[in-house]
Image 1 (tube, helix red, strand yellow):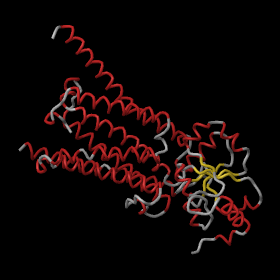
Image 2 (tube, helix red, strand yellow):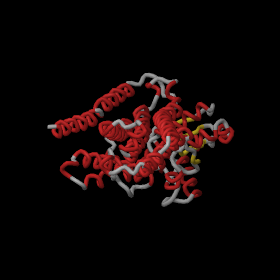
Image 3 (cartoon, chains in turn yellow, blue):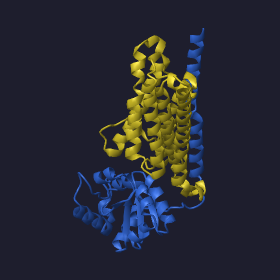
Image 4 (spheres, helix red, strand yellow):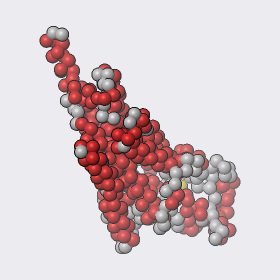
Length: 231
Length: 178
């Protein structure tokens, strides 16, 4: 290996690191911008002038948009593997992976909780129709059920990771449940999310997709062994 | 020792994550109480089904805007409604006002009128006057009120429209069974 190869390899890593950082910043900023853009009609009025539960509904959507973004970061972080991350100087360790996981769980719970609260406030009684998932209850109800199951998938994926000493090898396979859970989140948001197909959010999705692609590429490129992965 | 500490930390993180919902729900409860003490009129008026029926009876131009997804619209919708989501409205922009052609009342609705409110508010911003939501809270309230809907599994367009006109002429005949 000559000096030129080392230098070009190092500059390529610096380039990839910069791209990753830009994509992360965009993936975390654009959902907020989209939310502000669609909710801007409420800022000109006082809370009193909004229908019952509307603000809760808006907050629920904010939690949802960030749940998608943080989930994408979490999966990208896990897939990329510790070896690739340390080579690029962006490894923040298992604690960070765990913190992101809890953030995803928190945001999903906040989204669901605020949505049920919004519907309950509007209806004047507890919205029990959303408390139990119904995959065959028509378009809207079935897509809500999909979001419900995505939450269950995340909970299970986290639970097996936390009990990995007891579960030995099985936990790693079960932890991959986060992938179908993420797919369910995407289908849920794409099919009934108001903002999901708006231009700003589409750009955010593009950034998240690029991050996932890059993470998968890095995983194979650095062929990280299972022991070196955070996920 | 380290394993026990790690387990303890995980437990704390679980607790924090779940307890994080408590302040959110507290804020939610606070907002609910505040909105219950409403002292000013809603920025988007909510009209009752009775008002809508009286407009139809008087031959005034009422446009229903179904702000849900097209698949939901196909399942069922208020007779004569057009399917325009907030997304579509953003694309249409000021052209939306021209397309509506001076209606007397524009009723934007969805299931519970969360999306309906957003569309009605966006229409107001596009200078469409008389944009409103349903005080019965969306198509669910409309159905509960015993009023006709159109779409897959229900009557065809013309039959549903005829039924709606009949309900407008004689609202008592369309009361939901109590």
